[in-house]
Each structure stands twice: as structure tokens, then as C-alpha cells.
Length: 102
Image 1 (cartoon, rainbow, N blue to C red):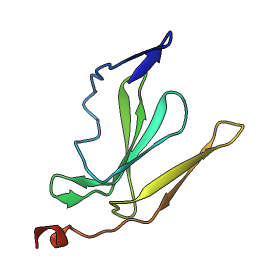
Image 2 (image 1 turned 120 degrees about the horizontal axis):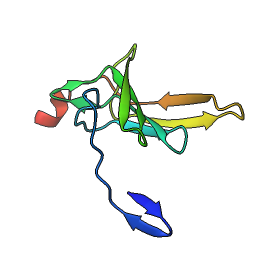
Image 3 (image 1 turned 30 degrees about the horizontal axis):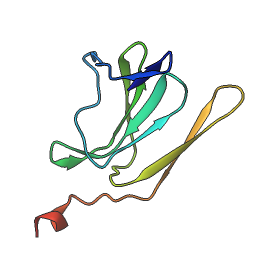
Image 4 (image 1 turned 180 degrees about the vertical axis):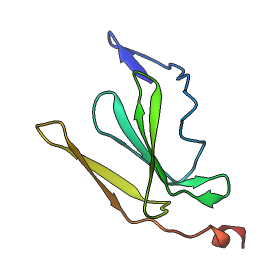
């Protein structure tokens, strides 16, 4: 969803080869007007250990391996005046969702 000249429009992103897969129970945190971080979640039947720094304008993503799998979590971002960013990830679970099947 994009707002140009006060008009909201949906636009399609044509991803590169390296792009976050379809996922549920993940979190996304914007760190600038064109960069966001997509992390964790449930991907293809497993809890994900990954994160992607996604450049919306250039339509590219960079893969990062996380030290801990996480789903059903939340995150917030603090951007400093020098442009550096800290992302705080809170809560969540490493469960494989066996409780959903019962």
C-alpha cells in the first residue's frame, strides 16, 4: 500500500530470488522509509530461524540467520539520529504448533 499525492494505491512488489517466503505469526519492523525487517514466524511447517532486511524501493532482500527460532512474537524499533537502528524482539514461542492440531 503506497500513498502518492494523497492517493492510496496498492502496488505489486516483484521480488528478487532472495525474498522472505510466505509465513504466518511473524513480525515486521520498519527501520526507515524504505527498509523493513521481516523476522521469524511459521514457514512451510516449521518455526523459522530467519530474518530478512527488505529494501522496498529497490525490491531486494538480504537474508540473516537468527540464533533462535521465534513465532507469535512482537518487535519494536528505535532509530538513532545517526541512522543506526535497534530492534527489540519480545515474547513468542519456539513451539511447533502441536497444540493447534489437538
